[in-house]
Image (cartoon, rainbow, N blue to C red; front, side, top):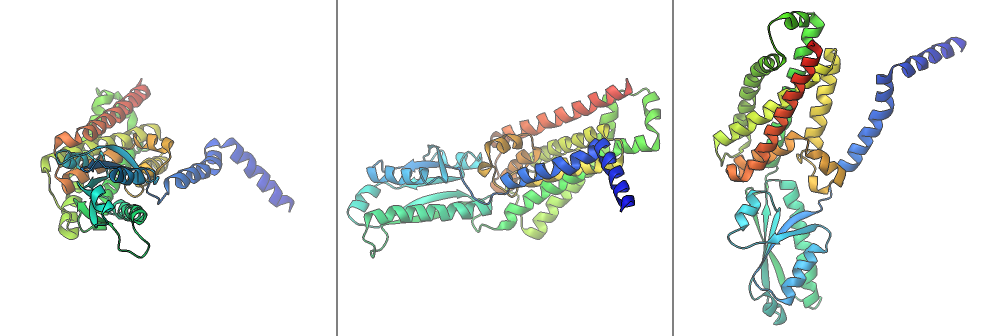
Length: 366
């Protein structure tokens, strides 16, 4: 027993001196609990909705109020025939409620009438849930105007845009493309500079007539070419095997993919410039690429349903913008005017991480 206690005492002192191990044991579990506890939320709330009210009656206003006060929908703006497509193309709303003219008169005279709900189908899971919300709300509102045994006066005519069959494949495959591309790009470059350190060739690089920016660019370009070819191959295979459409511009897709890859490779180089061993670099690369891309990009869990502080964190996740751009090009066929904000965010992220990697290496060389 004394020998066991002696070894245990020695190990406790060792852990206390090793701050990295202590942080892993104490901080990481709490971090994962908070992340999973808040991000893993299957409830869909704060669905952005626009209303095209062509009746402007007390009954139509009551229906709109029922949607807003349900707690599931946030009224964003009014819509009409000219603004329906742009609102859905730019992801400004997830649904549009179209109330036909004469709804109030039809309800007062006990005549059936249908309201239309247009849904953005690029996320099949969210669209299915929003569909059930809309049906429930309209049925509840209809019950206010009719006897219990009578046929419903209000019904819903649903139209799903971009993915009429609500195929989950068209929702999952773009997310998988972003997920696979992000992980492979970050991990590949995260190991590159560390490999130079472990082999002892970093000193030779420092003695060469080479500045940090040129070194970072030289390390990035080969991986960029390989990753770009690999990502395009994944997209082509997804179209061939899973029926993913291509409704937009290949050139715009190439631009979005290039910016996303530049940011991912720059992030890997930044990790590589900080880490001292390939093992540490590999673990850090997985941590910053795997979890944010899977949990905080909108790939699986809707960002609108997350707590406010996590929604703010997602603005620093490049996969969030790339997913919007990828789905916008392949599923919606939108152009640069609808994706300018996402492309600008991807470009800013790429410039930021590449600049930080250059600054970090310059400090090491000086």
